[in-house]
Image (cartoon, rainbow, N blue to C red; front, side):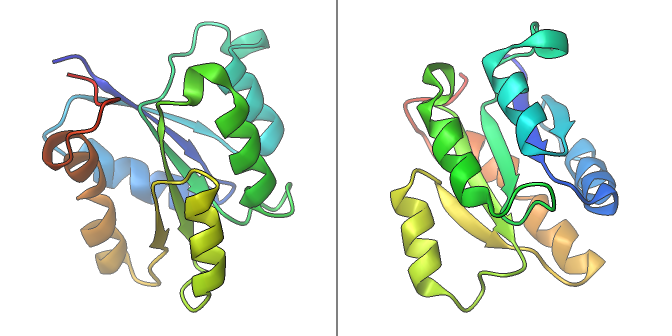
Length: 147
């Protein structure tokens, strides 16, 4: 089986390192890439400039509230317009959506596979992040799965 390519779009360096460490401990062959803003995300996904050799991610972890981009809503719409990303699974992560069912419904309708509430503790983060690759690429059998 080839490696699973994961792109994390996150502006918080601590969250990046925590999630990268948790994913790195998984028994799944994966490659982890990060970008910290909307401009670099779109360049990565369009393979522009310094990102011209980047793979199409199988899984995109999108922070909903990037400091350099109002909300992830516009970025999610832009990602879904990129032809090579149509089969990529987008998982939205946020600490702000836990009580906003209308926003979650809208995000799913826009093309995100699901929304994950960012936990407030390290233990909860580890628990949640450790199951994401296994769930999307071992348990769920989707047309776009990399097998």
